[in-house]
Length: 162
Image (cartoon, rainbow, N blue to C red):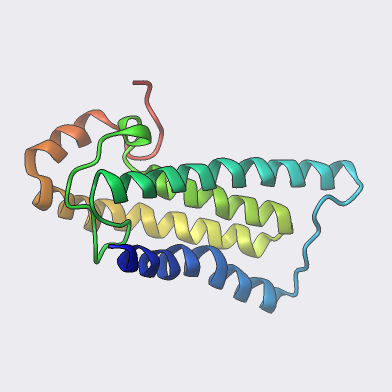
């Protein structure tokens, strides 16, 4: 189980949050501009730190739920075997992707990079297509009526109150 988790962690968030942004920053020549002593610099720094903090906490919480309750990983090749409707999953169907989007937003803000903001948009668009076309039909096959009922009452992207 732990090897599957480490592999999923290295491949998925590793490529989305580290490898692709590193390549983008290398090719665009953007350097870190953390907390420049200007009002804009301070704003971008704290906005980025807020996004990073919430995003990392949310992604870690979801990953822990998948490992402990779901007995699987976030990776499509080793998905949870048990349907998880706990924690943030009670309020929104894709909190892990929201966490990743927040981390990507943090990177764009901290580096003040339009290219990283574009990568954020590409990642969002890819998931906006992948989730309803591939992931959700797979969830219906694995979890049947339980997932259908969950999908009917819990929104995909914008959290609801419990």
